[in-house]
Image 1 (tube, helix red, strand yellow):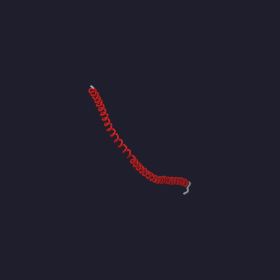
Image 2 (tube, helix red, strand yellow; image 1 turned 60 degrees about the horizontal axis):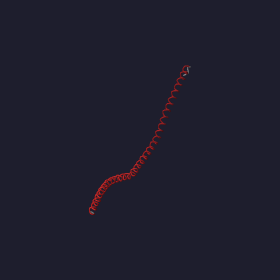
Image 3 (cartoon, rainbow, N blue to C red; image 1 turned 90 degrees about the vertical axis):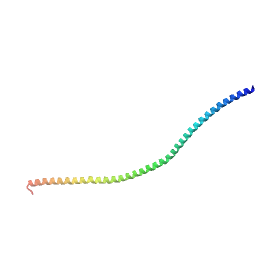
Image 4 (tube, rainbow, N blue to C red; image 1 turned 180 degrees about the horizontal axis):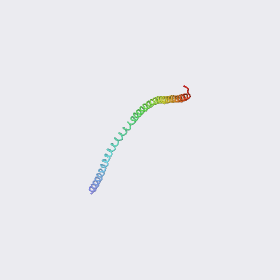
Length: 128
């Protein structure tokens, strides 16, 4: 009888052990799938870190490009200021020239009118 009791106890323990092994195998399977997920996530994170590591170089290149553009704009602006000054002087000269010509013409017309009037009255009075 003792053997029968022992055998039932061993069978019971074996069944429990089988159940525990099944649960452990399920747990291992879950760990494997989580491990695959973690590995994929790690690879993705390393890729993003690599991209972030490249960003300072890209920013540095962009800053050099912006500095170069700023220098070109500065040179263009200085050239435009000099050109604008030259244009301003030319416009001033042009503004003065027609004004002087108009003044001279106006003066000649007034002199002609005065001479005509004076001549008319001198002729009327008989002075030639």
